[in-house]
Amino acid sequence: MIKQKEDILYTSKNLLRDVKRTLKDQEEIKNLKGENFNVFSILKMESKENGTHSAFLGELLNPKGSHNFKSVFLGLFLQQLGFEGLELNSAEVVLEYSLGFIDDKAKTGGRVDIYIKDTTNKTICIENKIYATDQNLQVKRYSNHNKGNNTVTILL
Image 1 (tube, rainbow, N blue to C red):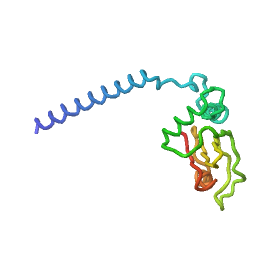
Image 2 (cartoon, rainbow, N blue to C red):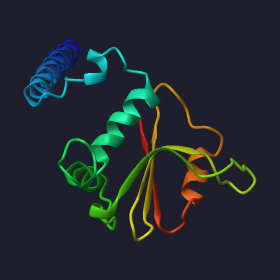
Image 3 (tube, rainbow, N blue to C red):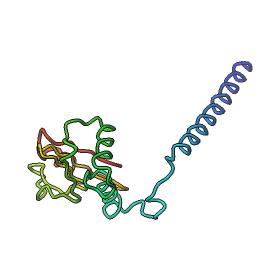
Image 4 (cartoon, rainbow, N blue to C red):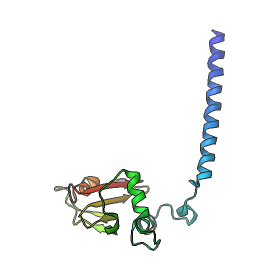
């Protein structure tokens, strides 16, 4: 009985040591990759969704953005999502795009934070959520927009 308790204690201590080492290694990797860098934190704008986050993301995703990288950022973003089919070179990015009046019965309408549309009528609705929950039927309303050619993405 005492031997079992000692074994359990020994195993627990080893497990905790291994977890601590793993967490330290992961933190070191994050530092090496620059993953702890957050421009919004530096500017004290972590929760200003519409005035900063959407504007910044929209500009990066815009093939006509001031970054002059054309569709590189949009392509990488869509690749991360596993999304194919959007004509990158013809894509337009619009902030605060209106899908019309909200109709909960028809499950349509609303205002999308970042809206991307190409010349083949494929669309992507991107919704930023910072310390907020979805509005009533928000994802469903956005999903119903341009049915069959639309993708809804929520960024948290």
